[in-house]
Image (tube, rainbow, N blue to C red; front, side, top):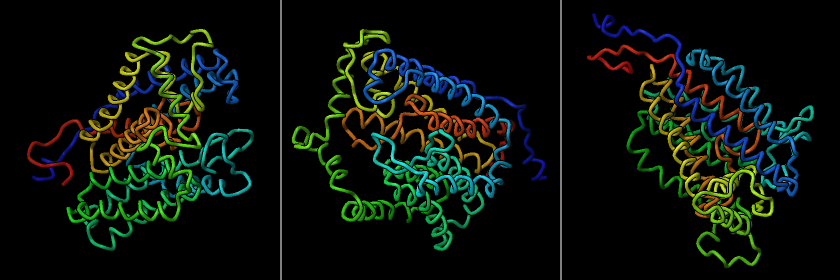
Amino acid sequence: MRSAFKKLTVNKHSVDLGLLFAVTLCAVISTLLIYSIVRSGISELEGVGPSYWKTQLISMAIGVLVAVMISFFDYRKLVKLWPVFVPIALGLVALTFTGLGYQREGADDHGWIRVFGVSMQPSEVMKIAFILTFSYHLSRDEEDMNKPLHMLLLLIHGGIPIGIVGLQGDYGTAIVFAAIFGAMMITAKISWKYLVAAPFVIAGVVAVMWFNFLSNFHKQRILILFHPGTDPENIEYQQDLGLAAIKSGGVFGKGLFAAPEEYIYVPELHNDFIFAHVGQVFGFIGSIGILIVLAYICLKVFADSRVTRDRLGRFICMGAFGLFFTHCVMNIGMVLKVAPVIGVPLPFLSGGGTAMLSMYAVIGLVLSTYSHRAVNYNVFYDDDE
C-alpha cells in the first residue's frame, strides 16, 4: 500500500525556458558589450583581437546547445559516469603544472593551458565534475554524514579541488569551490554541531592562509579596502578606474557606440571588470537591470532545487546556486571596491569561451533536474523518505 502511495509520474521532457532565456539574454548582452569594447579601440590596449566578440557569440551558441543536450540526459545516470569525467577533469588540471600550463597576462594564477592553439582554464571543467561527484557522494551518504569518518571523507572530497586551485595561486576559484561545498553541505542533513563549529574552523583556515600562504601583494589588496587612498604602490588603481567608469555612465549611460574617447579604459574591461563597462554603457538604469537578471538566475536555480525528483537533484541545483551566487557577489563586489580584486568572472557576461561553456554546462545540469522532476507528488509521504 505504501509503495502505491509513493508512485510518481514524470513529466514529458520540458526545459526551464525562463532560466535558459535569462542566461542567454546575459550572453547576448555580453557579446554586445565586447563588440563595443573592440569597436572603441580600447581592446587594443590589452591585446583583445578584433574578432573577440565573435568568439563570445560562438561560445554562447555552443553553450545553448550544450545546455539543452545535457537537459535530455537523466542526471541520475549522468553522475554514475564519474569514473569517466573525473579523470578527464583532473588530467586537464594536472597539465597546468607541466610545460603546457601558463599564467595568462593580467592574472595571478598559473591555471591555464594551451592545446592546439586553444587556451582554456581546466578549473572550469573541474567545477562541473565537483558538483556532480559531490552531489552523488552526499546523496549516497547523507544518512551517515554526521558520523566522524563519513564527515572526514566529505571534507577530503571538498578539500581536494580547493587545494589544487590553491596550489595554482587561484584563490578566487578556491573560494568558489568552498562556497559550492558549503551550499551543498547546508542543504544536506548536517548536524547543528558541525554548523556551530564551522565559523571557528573557517577562521582558523583564514588565519593559516594569511600568515603562511598569502603574499604581501594579496594582503595589500584586502587591507586597502579598509584604508582607501593610502596605497603607495597604487594597487587600487584598477578598482578606482572601474568606479570612475561606472560613474561616468550617469543614469542612462553613453550607449554601446559612443565615441572612443568617451569611454574610460579599465584593465580587464572585457573580462573581470565587464560590469564597469555595463555602467558606462547602460548607466545606472542598465546596471540595475543586469543585477535584476542575475538575481533572477540565482533565485530560479534555487527555486528549481525545491521541485527536483530527489535529493541528488536538489544537491546539484544547490551546488549550481553556490557557484553562480558566489561569482556574482565576488565579481560585482570587486568592481564596486567592496571586495578585493581576485579574478572571478561575472557569469554569462565576462569574456572567455571556457567560462561561458562551463557556465552553460552547469545550467544544463539544472535543466536536467527540472526536466526529470516528478510532477505528481503524494500528499502523505515525502519523496525523500
